[in-house]
Length: 377
Image (cartoon, rainbow, N blue to C red; front, side, top):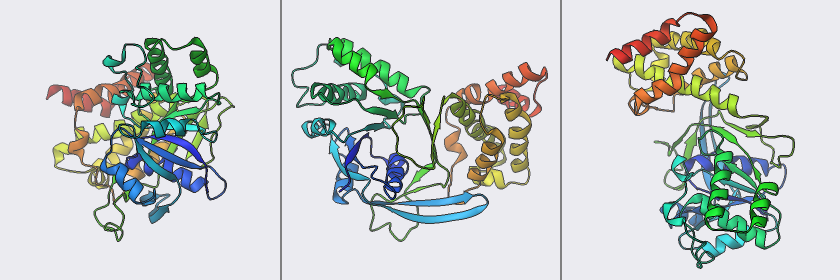
């Protein structure tokens, strides 16, 4: 029986096709352990995970190195069970005091990384029987319970798509501890004995496939692409199970910059250029005889040069991005990407324009066209 080594906040498609899948694959060579999934409420997903004993399938479809990939992986043993914070908080606290527990993983979205206004007062007397409101407060309560038990700290691995996500979560946990007027010894333990690891996750998980033989048998069936990257900051002391998709880096900032400027920037550029032509999906756009070469030129001749040496393996990532966009199984609609388009132009493409001008003293032709035409409309 595998040990419970992971306490996981969130049991959605992404984590099940990402960290839980990695855990399952790592268990083939060593005892990396299993996860207990924590959900906010007694949701359908919680019931399904328990009804299926934590077993489900991940369909991996797409292109890798020019080859089509279409495989189905049975993930068996990575998830031990799911617990509802609203109804099973004492059981979650007991899990937090397991001697085998090593990692906390979360994907609560950006909205999850904030404190609740109603939790400004002292620690409520029912904190042992009733879960706090916010995710940082829940995490603090669990870590405080572990500290009281005299156990070692944990490695915190947030997967939220926020810059310096662990630094932010650490600050929020400490702020909540001060709100609750908790002991200085706990604050010191949180700083010195827990490891707060900034990460960057990159994988497209599209949810249930439209067609698959297991659709009626597996209510947790989900589909993802072959590409996967989990960049984790490591100063040489990180305790982490091995996996080909996990890349230990000194700083995740260049990886975040690479993703925002190249992958997200290319998406936003396609909205500006391909959507007016009547093209509906990313796949249609990159297959278009005019738009496909245009996008490659934008990446290779303007965005990559603007970045200079600030990112790692930029050309390789650019090529991989175009291959990911050409995935025939992913129907990523440009109309969905177009949401908040003006904001995305400012955060994803305008910085590349500015960097290009600063580096070369000239305006990049394609970026100028995108930004000028969008402003004019």
